[in-house]
Length: 296
Image (cartoon, rainbow, N blue to C red; front, side, top):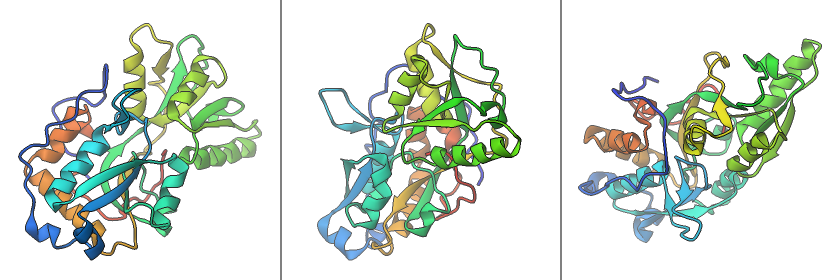
């Protein structure tokens, strides 16, 4: 999948920005007609998400549980094109795919990676790409340079993400090389893994470049964490996807067509750019296009 060219660098700094301007995005009657009858009749799409996971989704504040973020704005923009409301609901990450299978949600938008394993039960409309990142504590020079250098160390990750499977695979590689395995510590919320890293409970945290960049920049120059820039993940990358229920025939194609319309009028790139993620855009939006699984 080709990336969109961009004149600005990726990454998010400072506090989460206000929502992107979605005014002027018109409904497309032809695409509205593509929607499954239950959605067209109800006028809404129920979307499972998992906040906080900035810049993809967060709560506006501790006292205001309104969802904000890139996934939220992109979903609302797709809804405008399709002429339906996107209604977001909170769900622990490891319950999102089962929730779609059970009919609780029509879609998942949660910074989720399109993987072959997940494709066995839901479909994905791909909408972005990221690279993995390793977050470390500035005060501890651990010398991490590749996955084998993590052998024998404690690594944090979020419950239900593909980091769990990746670490299990890397642990087997450690054992094959005669080294101790990687001790995985999982946390239901990503920010909890960073707190564990700051307090010395883990030696590193694996995530993606957008999420890690946001967290490191938000802590400020005097913060304890940094991205290990010399760490080599090889050619691995994350293909982000909107998860779609197979019980909603035609919904994936409608979402794909809406994304293409948003790309054509510039809205897609504008939304990504609003969150400092213009470099992570795609030129087209395949259905179940991922060939390699990655971190969330």
